[in-house]
Amino acid sequence: MAEHTLTILLAGGSGTRLLPLTADRAKPAVPFGGKYRVIDFTLSNCLHSGLRRVLVLTQYKSHSLHKHLRDGWSIFNPECGEYITVVPPQMRTGASWYSGTADAIHQNLFLLERSSAKKVLILAADHIYRMDYAALIKAHDEACADLTIACMKVPLEEASAFGVMAIDSDNRIVEFQEKPERPKPLPSDPETALVSMGIYVFPKDQLIEALRSDSLRDDSSHDFGKDLIPRMIRTHKVCAYEFGGTRGRVTPDRYWRDVGSLDAYYEANMDLLKPVPPLDLYQRDWAIRTYHGQNPPARMVPGASGKDGMMTNSIMGAGTVIIGGVVRHSILASRVYVHEEALVEDSILFDHVVVGAGARLRRCIVDKHVTIPPGESIGYDLEKDLQRFTVSDKGIIVVPEDYRFT
Image (cartoon, rainbow, N blue to C red; front, side, top):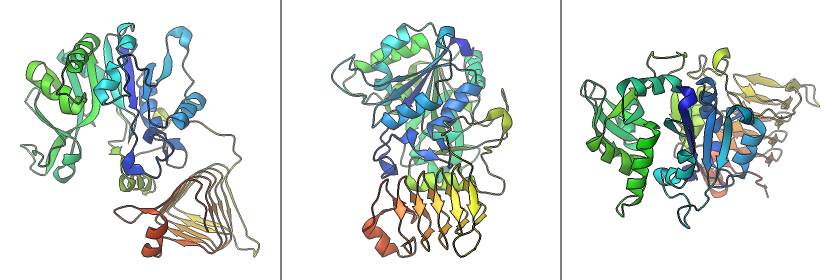
């Protein structure tokens, strides 16, 4: 099945709710977990699912993403028909950039038409999860569906952020609402709704037909959730595939997170520090692949006063050095330096962050190439922080890349 499937990753989103982390990078390129980029999780799922023909549609500030894909994901053999290919907008259908999820693929119809694939798997590149796509494709084939949508159950109060669906006893979708203000609960559970994960399987010819039809409509925003899916439910067999079932290759994880906001991003990172993380990065048979920079080992050393560095319940990336400082419940990426008597708590520090002696950080995200001056405090005086930095709804302070203190 996998050899007959073309995979398309939609990776062009600007991620405005993640600003300033997305000021100079696309959302799929945002670092995660001290080592990875967000897109690594979707690409690793493709790798483990046997999907080796992958198009990555990019657009917004894509240089960092392109570089990461070149350095970390040039792993397939083109001579065997395998590839991960970046596809920026090429203006083949007009003078516009990608203007919707469906439009992005419609602008690249020529790539579908020249492909020998029989099916197309469409994925978002900005979610954190593990999933065996081969099991999804198998369920799609067995149902003889015109479209299969991966779905999951979420608390009703969270469902308005997603496409909400209703299904019949045969898993056929009979109703679909994109981000409704008042989501409909499941009949069997009034506190839960069934929502789309933004993962779709189409027969290739059916997808081409649907995209061409949509492109001719003046009333369409050319989006799968808003336009194509609601129309197809009325005229075609559209089925649901529930994430977290027991079909196919089973992994211990039942975890999926949309990290589209600063608070969601922070909380997903902090999930990795739980005593039993809901997403197991140490699972040997489903490793998350990424680019590995040439960095020395991490270490802790005494400061000038002879006090040892200390780290508790934290992740420390390669090349990071704690020099007599204290790190608690935090994620430090590569080449981070924490100097004597500095304190880092409940925080995420990106590459090449330096925390000066005696500085204190609490509930912060610090982007790369930032030097925190000695004695500085962030996360202790909200009014002061609001004057300098972005602060999330739940009070997470975000220091932008290359910030210079005055």
